[in-house]
Length: 322
Image 1 (tube, rainbow, N blue to C red):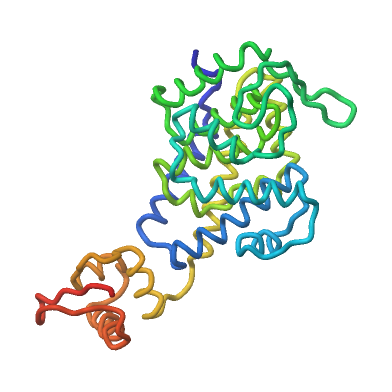
Image 2: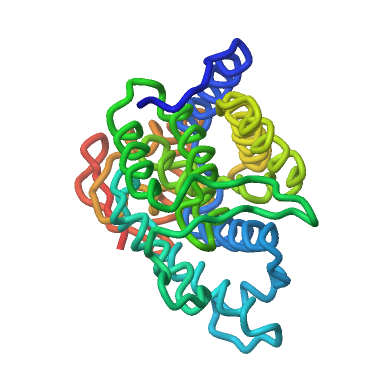
């Protein structure tokens, strides 16, 4: 069965806005090299997602762990971060449309953190659970005997439904939290998996700090999950998540509003083109707002810095980075 939700005018407006922003990003470029943006966003994402779950480590401490430096903190918090680092290092190896890959990611994420005689990391729960907030039961998850079937149905919806991937990723996130398929780690897994789903169609999501915005609006995150539970559909949560995604794209676009200099352009293009040969025209196509003389000066500078080879003469000149 298709999970229940309604496509509202607000959802349509947000989808249109998000699509425009993604188009704007794709039409220009990321001014910081992808490796730098990826590392920075990974640190923010890990810190934010784990802080939502009560982890105490700062971005500086997570950076230190990434660099294999010693950190003084509770051992459980360190292990949570180390596991998350391993998952993000393997992010591109997971197929977001396969349940077995979700289990594999959970195995890495929760290794050494789930202490259960019956069910460990990577195993769907078979027992019944309720989510308690303070002294009150916030959510009673579906019966343990139903979890495997519900998760298979959810992945079928993700693979086969014709709705936009933007919407399906939000629906998946909500339904995943509703089903609560694991004994622990469901929050961080649901957020991770939505990002992974979106990366399949929009690679820019690898550079978006969606998690840090969720952390800033953490009470609303849980409020919208609860509201969707009460209404029996994921519409409120879809609207919330699309607003978060839209705001994340705004932040990325604002961070790109800088003046690029010769060295910046050359470094960006090197990351994009790799070892392939290219012409001045192809270089200009990547930086649409520069003139032919500026492109020539850039490439002349790169040649003089021994950053690239040059073949041929005049209009037939080709270049290749070393």
